[in-house]
Structure formats: structure tokens, C-alpha cells
Image (cartoon, rainbow, N blue to C red; front, side):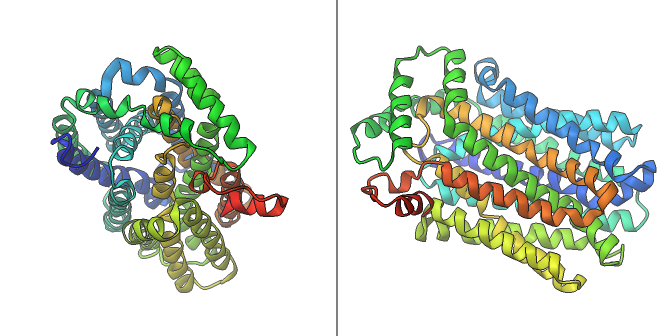
Length: 444
């Protein structure tokens, strides 16, 4: 599938990119406004973090019904409903109502974002130049996440009540919803040939020298998938029983947890431990998200082309841990702000490279790829809500510096999981008889 086939795909790509600017605004806003939310409601770190619990429940809810969404609503209605749910959240939050109602509103926002993320990732993963378009999509996310703290901090520091900023998000999301609804007209019919494509399964069954026993077991699962009937319930069971679905879901779970926790709590860390100026320290979050944007726009395609998605994810993951370790160890707010921006550059390409790897021939059967990607996106993205809450909860007793070691720990778990995900980029390489060389072939 390409931008010109089906013809409306150009509009769909534009609509997805526009939507992801809004998603970037959506994710980055709470972190920039967190000190103002705490003051407004006179609440602690742990209570303020409940907004992320509400969002996490929304993500998990969508993950649980992922097999029903497509037959119930189809692509067009699914992503449009996602936009509508986000608008409901923004309207409630903009009112500045009681805090428990705000937490419930974040549930609607989490459910809406899960629908948007899943449908956009599925659409982009079908396109021919997947890594290029993923860099555009996730770069757009970074742009929204960069601009959001700048505007939010500027308004809040001038005395504008924090919750009025969500009126800006309504103004962004409303026209985007209409654009999405127009662009995804007839999307189910247009993309049906690619949703039902069997060529990947045929290529897998024809290939030899798979490389290790894990991949041979997965090949058996792929062939079994052919024998299942087409009912969505059976497809859901196949997706849930596929080990790769859950390995990648937990990889994204930890990645999103690390990424959003850093963006959400780095401002509080600079205020509490580096005694930064409250009027300006909020801009450090924009530096972080700006670095993430540059990384996604400028590094995703070159890394994918030169190293391959598998190796590139390994390199940027280890590099991210090293830079965040420097932030933890250097007690200078200016140097740390620069390093946080550089960490964002390395963190940025990780997610689109992961989605590009997921679209690789042979990793997940085509028949369950839509459901698997929905589970990975919805369940995985809930990490971006759960771990910021955990950071806030732990910060209540230890302090906000804890965001840095938690980030490093989450990235360490990501690297471990990445080793166990089958290395389909080396599928045709004859496995070494040496145990350590076989392990290296899985990693690199």
C-alpha cells in the first residue's frame, strides 16, 4: 500500500500527522502544568498523579475490547470516536471542576488516545515506506509535545488559570476530528486487500534456516493461524496466545512509561533539587520534547536504513540510559537541561523503530496484526500513564529525583525484553553452534 494506492491515503497520512500533533499536546500538558495543579487543588504528588491512573484505565479498557472495536465501528468511526472522547476530557478539565471529576475525565482521554494511537499505527504500518512515514507521524507527536509546555508555562506564569489551557486543546482537536472523519471515509473497503494479505504467511512457510528454536516454534504458530476460522474472537485468542504480541506490548509499556515519566516529572525535579527558576524551568520540558522531535524526524530513517530496526533500537536504548545517568550525576541545572534535550534525541526514534520492526515480514502473522498492534498500542501506551503515577507515589517519600533511576530501570527492562523478541532481520543467517555467538545473533 502506498500514498497513491488507495488514492485517499494522502489525506489519511495528513490527517494522522495532524492528529498526532494533538496527541503530543495531550501527553505533554500534564507534566508542564503539574506544579500549578498541585497548588490549585492543594494536593500532594501522589494525589496529583491520579490523573495518570485515570488515563491508564482508559488505555487498558481499550486493550481489553480491542478485538471488538474493528467489527463494531470500523477504522473511520474508531478514530473519530477517539477524537470525540478526547474533546470530552478537555471540556471537563477546562471547567476546573473538582479533582475526582478531573481524574475521571482523564479516563476518557486515555481511552480516546488509545483508539487514535492504535488506528494510526495500524494504517502507517501498512504503507510501503513505513519507517519514513512513522518518523513523520511520531515527529508530529514530538512537535505537539514541544510546543505544549511552552504555551502552558507561558500562560500559567502570567496568571492564567492552568485549566484554561485545555480550551486550546479543544480548538486543536475539534477541526482535527472533522479532518480525520473525512480522510478515513471508506477506509475499511480501501484497505481490505492489505488487511487480508496472505503473502507474508506464504513467505514465512517457504523460508528455511530460521535461526533458532524460538523462531521455529513461532513458525508453527503462524501455520496454525491459517487453520483458525475468521471470527474476531478466534483472532483475539490467537493474538493473545502469540508470545511476540506480549513481548512487544511490554516493551512499549516500559518505553512509554519512561518517556512520559521523564517529560512529566523533570520540571518538578529541577524545581525541587536544582532550585530552578519557576518562570523558566518549565521550558526544560520543551527542550526534552524538542529533542525527541528532532530524533524522530532526523534519525529514524537513517538508523533504520544503516543499522536496521533491531540494532538501532539497541543502540538508542543503551545511549539513552547513559545520558540520563549523566543527568543524575551532574548537579548543574543548565548542563542537565542540555543533557535532557540530548536524551530526548536518543529516546525519540525508539518507538517508531519498534513499530517499523513490528511491521517486518514474519514477526506477527498478518491475520492478527491489526489486533496485535491494537493490544501493543493500547496496553503498551498505558505505561505512559501508570509509571508517571508510580513516580509521583514514590516521590511523596523519596523525592522527585526518583524519576531518573526509574527511567534507567525501565530502559534496562526494555533491553532485556528486546533480546527475547525474535530477530527476524537475521532470519536467514545460519545459527552459530557457540552459545554466546547465538545470543549475539539474537541481540545484533
